[in-house]
Length: 236
Image (cartoon, rainbow, N blue to C red; front, top):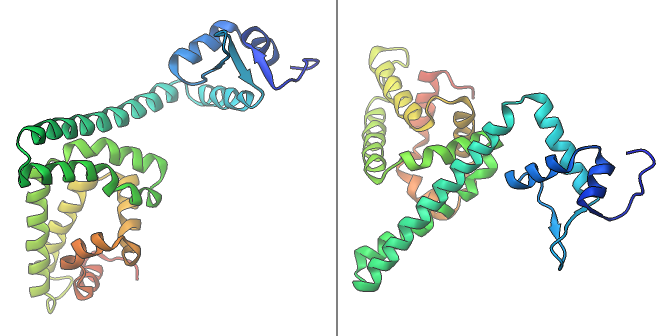
C-alpha cells in the first residue's frame, strides 16, 4: 500500500492495487457477501477507505483458521433460515385468518409474531457464540415440546417444595437434582456457552420484562432455589 494515493473512493482496480489483492478475490468476496462494494449510478463498483479495515478482518479470519469462515457463514445461514421459517408460518396463519378470523387463529398469529421478539431482550446475556447456538436450537423447540417441558418443571418445583426439609445430600434430594439437571440439559443441549447464557438470564430475573416475570412467578420460590443450591453445590 506504500506510495498509493489515499482517497475516499476507489474503483475496483484501484482498490485492488491499494490493498495488494486481486480483483478476482474482491469479486469472490462480493459473491460471498463478505465485502460488498457500493455502486454508482453507472453501475461501477466503488470501495470506501473504511472498507480496508473490513478487508483486513477477513484476512485475519482466514489466516487464523481456514475452516472458520465456512463455519461462520453456515451459522449465519442457519439463523436466517430459522427466521425465514418463522415468518413463513406467520404468513400462512395470516392467510388462514383472512378466510376465518377466529380467536384461536388470531392467537396463533400473535404467538408466531411475538416468538421472534420474545427472546430478543435475552441476547445481551449471551456470548455471540452462545446466542448463535440458541438460535440454531429454536426450531427444535416445538409447542408440544414446550408444553411437556413446562409441565415437568411445574411438577419438579412442586416436588422440591415438598422436600425442603430433606437432607440435601440424601437420596431423595439427589433424585430431584438429577431431574433438575436433566431438564436443564435438554434445553441447553449440555452446551457450555448456552448454559452460561441461561444462568446469566436467570441471575438477572428481577430486571426481566414484566410479562416474563409474571410467567416465571410459579418458579420463583426462593426457598426452592436455596435448597437446590445446596443440593447442586451452587456458589452463593
